Length: 245
Length: 161
Length: 198
Image (cartoon, rainbow over all chains, first blue to last red):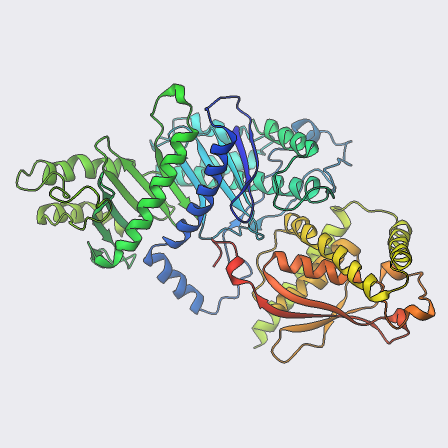
């Protein structure tokens, strides 16, 4: 899953960060990106209003039952190991005191988590790219545009798609095993792999959020909601993106 | 594997057909061409239109104008779109079971729409003819052809359940 | 009734575990004396700069805390990915068991709930900021030494759309019984809740 572009949008819909990693010039200047960001922000809101009635009725029915499940709020995203981390370090057992900013250990987090984004836009698939959106509880949106494309044909023999997920660096064999068992029915395969893609993207974007909370929030000279101009942040994010290829 | 609703939009930004299934297990529930859905239709049109614009802006211009959106997912439902060169949009709102309903939408276009609407010389090919062009998005005429609706129902009902 | 008690105690247990685990394994630590002395030098310098006008010092500490809080919340959310709290009871639990544990390695007690469950007090059995501090005579009446904590909480809660009043009620530095901070919910900022959450 190669990330082409990363955008960060603040609470009010303004663009505070954007970087292209694929090197392709698509002729968009910074003004165009600003417009893009605010359009995405409003589309995000519209998407939550379009929830079909059947879904709303189901939600009402399930909330009436006394189900005090801790994670009844949103979808639980499983932890996918080492997304975006350096493959060499994860194999190097002597280097346990890896410094990830203020996060100790070899990865930013190790548990599954509940998505804050229930009704808003999460994924947009097109013919040439897929866009993933991760929204935090404070209203910030992290948008990643990746060149992986979800195929239309339901033929599991097309191994092109499996490459995109297996390349998420350091993915343990367990995920590929759960992958092959899902090849029983073609539609199962499709939904599992697209869910996996969204989960990888969520894991990755949460790590970008961790880096943001370190290098941007803790910079005393950074004003909130303003464009990010931190070289350290750029460097760390670039590292993560290149690890993901 | 549930379908929540099905919409057709024409090139004048009007919704010319919509079918909503409100009870996920009952294929005969829901509404056809209901007036209450006009707000939803406009929002859906706006959503798809804006995202299509974004997509086209973000695409590499060298590969031509071939980048079109396929699916839009939120936390609760998924939107599948099929846009034809004549400006028709076929839109399906479903759950997450299947990644792509492209073949379903293509079948609806080629075998149901073309057969019962385009080839029907007694139906206007453009439902907004005789209305001023300024009324973009304001047209309210819908496809009410019985054969079309019947064929659509029989094709989609087994998938709805 | 018993099942809800069980689930709520298991929720708070898992919060405690989350807090402990992150404190032990996932945060960098610094020398506690350095931290206490840095904070002490800030307070004493402020007292000098404002010529012992302790009300102004309190306000300045609160503002500093507010600026910290609006940024610290992102760190907390990125680290724990906590889902939104349904009510103030849950919020109080998360603050006392998770947040304070992760950042200061203390677990204040939650008590003194208001009848409508919208205000509570945090009782601090220990305070790493003021371990070695003795207030001068003229400060004991007006200065809230650890007022920065109130600012941090207010800033952090505001960024998750909870408008609260946070203020000191008593402080052992003033020869009072216990250190107590009161948190009172004014309103939930519904307009600012990000779209996409129900």
